Image 1 (cartoon, rainbow, N blue to C red):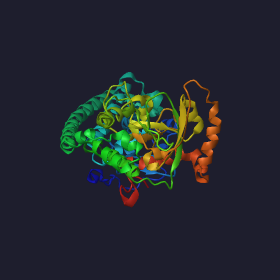
Image 2 (image 1 turned 180 degrees about the horizontal axis):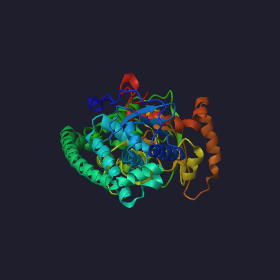
Image 3 (image 1 turned 180 degrees about the vertical axis):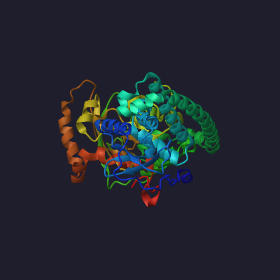
Image 4 (image 1 turned 90 degrees about the horizontal axis):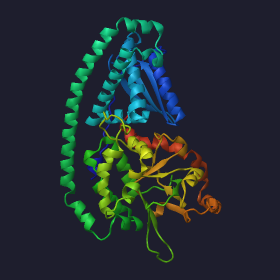
Length: 470
């Protein structure tokens, strides 16, 4: 199984040195200001910057992803000809404004698509091309309606120049869109053929194994409550549809499985969850006065199937929950991603493979109707949902399951009772926290952000994917 999780090295197509102190086109400067302001407002660790580069293609920029202490930086290296070709600059402007604000919702999803495309995922390549077409169509609409001058802040001279060649620009855009759509259809067919082949390979690998797991006496819930991490890891590894995953997904789930099997408690973090009246909690029979407690994600807890068989839903959930595109909109994107799945969890937590937690006790208390629980996790078990539309919740997601040895403390009460009794529990929690915990807890959300992204955007350990995270 480990062979399914080999991490591929990313080679970014960028070798030349950008020009220093270059003046960025006004429309591109506006795009950067707009996107960066929204990312800052939503507490998303993202920044985009446009850099002139003579080696960049006129109709397609080069992307370079970097990270500083707490921010993912997307450098867009564009050809300086765009500074004099207003239509091309506006097209690049719309690539980011239209794509992120209208299709993706989070700039970090664009990073995810770029990363997966660089690692050979055909659906991600399809999506980058689809977004390029979408930007051209957006600009075409603006040209037809003469509405581009307001939101993109182009200069008066550029505006007048564009109007003087408007008919030619419209004709050129239509021709380019037709050509790219043909290329898009061919790419989609190739991606779908690969997906069908992956489905066949998965069926061959799991044809008898899944049935055997589902017939055995000890079901998933039994193994969780026994804290049998090795057995649970093997079971989950079998059910996960690795043959269908892109490299970012494989790397993420590989790290997660490793943390299940061999947790590292040295740098563990404490998070909290407010409990409702759902069926997400597992409890063992009382043995010597002790009851083991575990948790399931909504995807598993709301199913009526036997516990182990519920894991089959991970296949369908990957596409449904991991879709890069915002729901209730015309679907033009086909790739899946972890950042996208986390963001979609916010909109539809009832079908999610994730369990919501937060490092902020007060936030968890606000969600509590039946109780509150404190967990301690190996950070590799977690994913920070910085793409969420609700940054104040400081949501940290735990995929699929939680083991009894990760439950630090729990307090429950009857629905409708006063939560004032939580004050003694809060003090009890404080007694569990080490000095390192007390220093770390207020900043866990930000500190874990980039750490969560590294397996998704490229693993930097051992020099792999050099250039993606520098």
